[in-house]
Length: 260
Image (cartoon, rainbow, N blue to C red; front, side, top):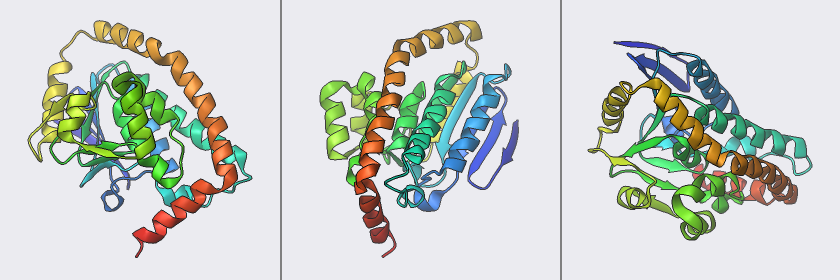
């Protein structure tokens, strides 16, 4: 039994004790805008107070989970507008905390590309399911964007060596390598990622909610100080980076190539 509602770019459904949030911009691999992230935050905040929901799945339509920031939204950011750069980081802080702060178990059903902030968002889910078409990574440096919250999101999974590789090369890895590194917990048959995630969610929904909540509280607590530091540093670094105009130039170059 499902109970759903939808907007243009973010779909929301409930299946018994599981909620599913789906990004719906397949034509650009579900790259997201501020308004999309705000809508996701609203759904996650509503779920936090819903004791009938025990598991939450996030996924994407089409060939991508989420390609990260829609560069068309940020390429024109003024080098002198430090407040805008900080507000941008604050928005991601709210998004990341919204999924981290859920007491329910969260599952990212990763289909296709998960890159940049979309990759980070997937890493913040408790568990990740993908298939052989998955490509995951942190290519922000290729667009002139320093990877600060990305370093934080990757560090506890990858360690210094691989975090440096992902942050400085912009390389994407396939599903086999992603599972070997711990970026994916499970690999499903091609085309069956969401079904696999729903079956997993149905099983996990039977767990005692008190034990799940207390376990997640401890997991969050371990990383709270480092997240707070990452957000402070992200604001400082992005003020400096956007103040030079380099990210804007690189994003404009990328967008020009995409429209040819």
